[in-house]
Amino acid sequence: MNQRSRITGHTAPTTDPDINEALRQVIAGQIGPRTPGVIYDNADGIFEVLAVTTDRDEARRILKRRAAQFAITVHEMTTGTVGPICTVWTGSDRVLKAVAA
Image (tube, rainbow, N blue to C red; front, side, top):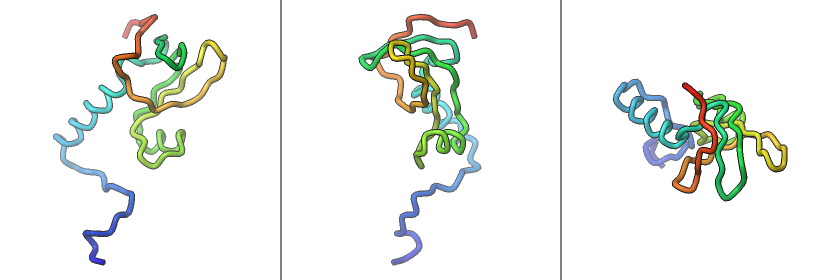
């Protein structure tokens, strides 16, 4: 097997600013309007955002997922549980309470 065909599960960081900016924009779109203090709901419940982590290494550590690009710590308000998620913002998510930026 040659070096190019081996899959390692790790992508080397790029130094290309255009690629980094494009990735940042994709991740921002996946996070959506979820910032600390925002309350939103979807089919899974009502959530208050406690923290947003966009550092890939930290997100991967928090979520224990090798491909995580971000982590959002939420308080599930109906059950009282707190934990990290990495779900993307979709059309079925709805902001109930926004916070000033």
